[in-house]
Image 1: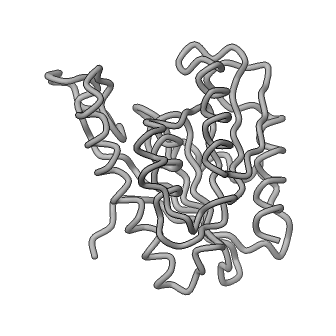
Image 2 (image 1 turned 120 degrees about the vertical axis):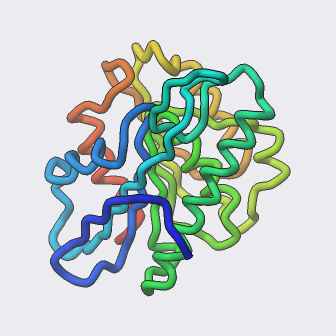
Image 3 (image 1 turned 90 degrees about the vertical axis):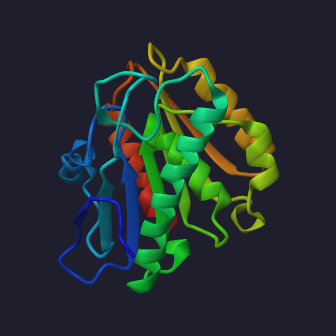
Length: 218
């Protein structure tokens, strides 16, 4: 099967765990590759990190510009939902590829920032096998009603880390907080963190991300 373009960074030892980490709007897979040294993953926790590149799309409908985006910014919810579904299928293929390499689904975390977080949540809640967890940074749950209808029972109560900047001008923190309440309603085991920052990642957050990986994988 043909996989979406991506970067793989493995541990020295044979990986036992995988993190599939999706970048935000207009970035690419290299965006979070640079964060790895700052995570300070404990020795013995052998993780393969996979950083997919979103396809090139028009950032808004009918634009001639092309940037990497998991979906276009549109007021048409049907069009947005279609593109979210298309991107989710690509991430499902990455999960399946990890399974073929011997990584059990429960040893896989889906992670994403902003748009990437939308896709991580969408995909993780619908995957038919139980995954390890979801890391969702500065993002939101898209379309609660359809998520509730399509969610896989296998992923009830999986751990979810939601992290948001208190001064986020792109995705206001109230949208993240509403997503937190809706994910709890869906039966997820949600951990909420907020920080003195905007639409970005801070040092304190990186420490909490490492703790989440350790909690899920050990």
